[in-house]
Length: 118
Length: 118
DNA sequence: TGAACTATTGAGCAACTGCTCATGTATTGA
DNA sequence: TCAATACATGAGCAGTTGCTCAATAGTTCA
Image (cartoon, rainbow over all chains, first blue to last red; front, side, top):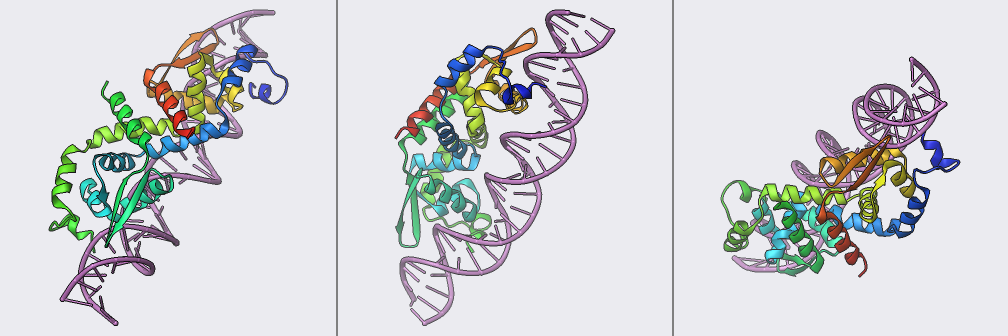
């Protein structure tokens, strides 16, 4: 079975190419970090939240009204986005206003929209 | 409880703002499509595969050697990438060579790397 | 103070993911 | 024709995700 090659003696289809590409490859850490940021954008609810926040600052209540979802669901997602420093917030009385806190995110979404348009 | 507002009579924190943002918001379909493409990039293995393919065309065996993962795992992921038209392939005897089939993807990954660098 | 309101959080659950393992398919060459 | 090779695929499983529901925390104001 082919799996043995990975463990024991090595015969690749193109040993040189494998060696060369391996040196150019991004590290595990970079790949993990990259995947993490993309994973956050990999959910329709979070995409919508980030998109509406790219239009303007909004409170949890308004976001939940706009997306027609419960405040709980929105709040859970906002916590995630907060932890990843993609959104920031400020309290004003009982209301908490959220806004984007990452100049890359809006750009990434914009690029994604372009991709969609083809 | 706040949930009733979504179902019955409406009182938002800022009704006008909700209305305005709602008209500017991306549709469900767009959000879903966007999330789908980002979700694909939201896994370290797939990020690595796409990245090495952005360096050069490679067969399953070599990718599995480079990433130090089984061919089965790689093949499963390649099927996904194939279905989403992010990679293309050509057969040469027993060997199947994969390469990128989407000019946006490399760009998105590059942007992600920039984001990582901060 | 305490009732009303906005937002947050924890538990729990159904659905999904990414892998392994075993098996199947396509191609080559002896 | 048949063993070997390169890849693909289905089943299954542990871990993760995104929601709901109920409870809780902060804030305001009568």
